Amino acid sequence: MDCIQIRGGTPLKGEVLIQGSKNAALPIMAACVLVPGITVLKNCPDISDVDCMCRILQCVGVKVKRQDDALLIDASKVDSWRLPEEYETRMRSSVILAGAMLGRCRKVCLHHPGGCVIGDRPIDMHIRALERLGVCFEQTQEGILGSAARLAGGRIDLPFPSVGATENVILAAVLAKGCTRITGCALEPEIAALCNFLNGAGARIKETGRGCLFIEGVERLRESCYRVESDRIVAGTYLMGALAAGGDVFLRNAQAGQLECVLQTARRMGAVIRTEKSGVRVVRGGRLTAPERIRTEVYPGFPTDLQSPMLVVLSQSQGECLLTETIFNGRLAVAEQLNRMGARIVVEGCNARTKGPRQLTGCCVHAGELRGGAALVLAGLCAQGNTEVYHRCFIDRGYEDIVRDLRSLGADIGVKT
Image (cartoon, rainbow, N blue to C red; front, side, top):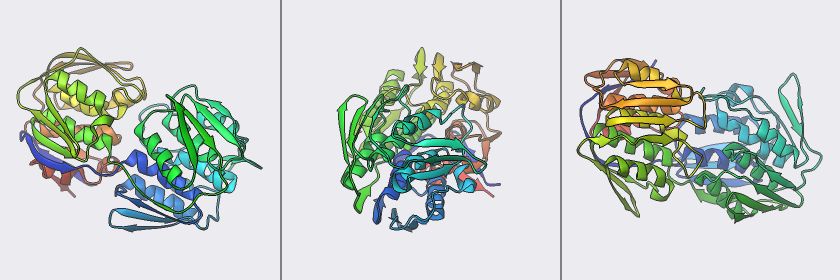
């Protein structure tokens, strides 16, 4: 299997272009099912999760073609409402196709979605919310069957600001009869991106308050062209790399407004952060100081997707920190691999106590999920000697080419086949 090899000890320096957003591209690709024509998505990241979504769309009759950084998605014809189990169970984001398929076909057969094993992620909230729009669900031998003679708008109060559930309701509601009010919506930038895309295609979605959306159903969506925003988590990962290994890095196209909590934390630890229209610069010369506490939260709080990379930064920082994971209860599993490299992380339930600085030593480690895999690569950057990170396939789900990007910043990194 492919593995990533890193020889640590070199500070990062230079500029890296931040790719298109995975978490924005996937729901927008699902939304293309609602458009009976061609959609052009520019700046769409070339990652394995996007490829998996392309394959799912093709299995239901949608034509997909990549041209440079753009995807051309032709949903003029959708000839199946059965999602392919082979691809659906590989990727968590496949669940958002439920709302899109119901909006287009009034029927969908889905399976429990796959993806990274980072804790319990039930889809009950999605199902209950879609039922409020007139969908009936039943468990069959084929999978979970959802159907609606007609979709009708309604009032939906989400008990937790779930990104996926919010996206599913939006996708089902834009072509539903009447109006839908959703409260308790997720506030992530990817939700705004989805709404902007749909409005550009003729939907009528308004934000009526913090976490509140009003959707007036329309008869039909039209063809459009949309540019996917840059990936805030990729930007945050490379920012963490600069904090862990030291150096001076400019993150081109990084959107500072979407990383406010992360940037505030980095400044508090002693890094120099400069924001510009074209990106974010991060400089770390001396030792960082660990904050007493970090707590992951829904947006705009500290992102759970950057919790694992932050553990690496804390291992290189002076002092103790209590990091609490509140979103995914299995995301601290990477601590075991980091401790093998010399980190000092004590996990108790959803809490991780760290103490640094620690001299990490390169060894063979294994990625178990996307963001944890990226964290192991960052650990290799500041470790003494050689590090080999196996199961690169997890990392490829969200990063176009983490080896290329870090090499452009001066890292001694490559791929072993």
